[in-house]
Image 1 (cartoon, rainbow, N blue to C red):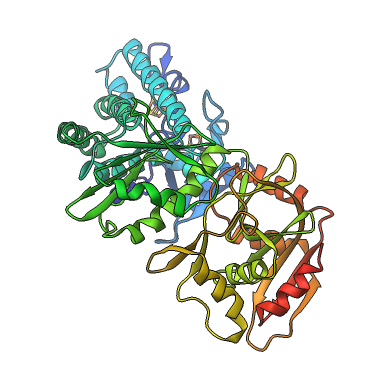
Image 2: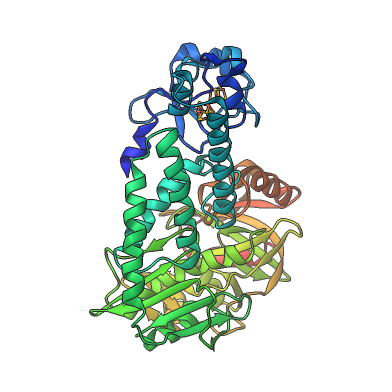
Length: 501
Ligand code: SF4
Ligand code: SF4
């Protein structure tokens, strides 16, 4: 579907400035529509530098295309005020020159004013409803500009549905959305602008019918749910997977429930010796190309997806990429770059009697400033660290090893060593950990902007809108002690960290 990305690179879009039929103008039609400006039809419009003067000061999102160094204005266009273009007289040339098929037909007298207006209104209404549904289903994340356009959401959705229906049927809510997408695209394709991916969408829907018929013969599935949510997991033809859920989590408390019509949050099934899984969160997904061949390999997918489910359960929390330890009555947050040794350091601290709230992620509630244990199992990268400095961490990892993939060893630590999902802690200091060869172990105060930078750089998950996210983090860091730890030996680092709260 790469063609979709390139499609709007040509200079298109805008409210047309074209002739009238009687007293009725093209502008009247456009004012009821706007779908070529609000991201329903296109993702961006290519501009030239002379066009920039007109959009200046209108908070339009102007980007330089990485591939061709051309200037692009992202949609939804910030200059569109809901009923038209707020900079109509100085709008960019490509906008002024654009005329959709509807307007051309109106101009040529092939479409009456009444008919043209009614079609434009209908298209805009369908786009509005589709966007609302896309937001509800999580296909569009309000506040994240690059994901905000309906065009982007729809084209990505069709791509994902094509992948899914190659091996499994769509979930009911996905099928419903796909039907609405086709309905919208058919109207657009016939009257406004050709849509190449309409054919893909129709073929995908047909293939979904075939997959549904195939799946009707499957054996009855096992259903699991966890204590904190009504979300269910559906397991077909592989009962051995049931125990994995507990091994890659901590305190989620899974239980078997009776089969129901309820939409599952994830399906796992076995076919020809491989495990396949799919999920509708946060949009159709299926792992069809390299399906895990053993239970161990499936663990990584499960472990990773648990964060998505946690975020979906708690849309108002921010998941930080950090190891977090309970010291005194506070949660000490340890940030660090990729492979900076956070988990090994956390394990070392556990071996010294401290409790780990999360080895890789922790949820911050911006409203209270409290930290919540996400409850994904402690996972340590393989191979386990070598050398005398890591003896205690390595021994602990070996003692509590539950299951391991090629890359990760998952641990099942006892409750006094590792927090269960749902446990809440008051937040303490924040530390950026840097492991360096021959470094002197020391902790020094650091600038808050560095901490903010590290949090944003290592952000995982996508909860909260961007602006809210920054506001929440700034409020959280205000008056909070923040440090940088440089270390080589985890035991010495642990000793210093113990004294921080
Ligand atoms: S500048 Fe005006 S005409 Fe051009 S995309 Fe934005 S709102 Fe539409
Ligand atoms: S899609 Fe056509 S009718 Fe709708 S606003 Fe754009 S130019 Fe006007």
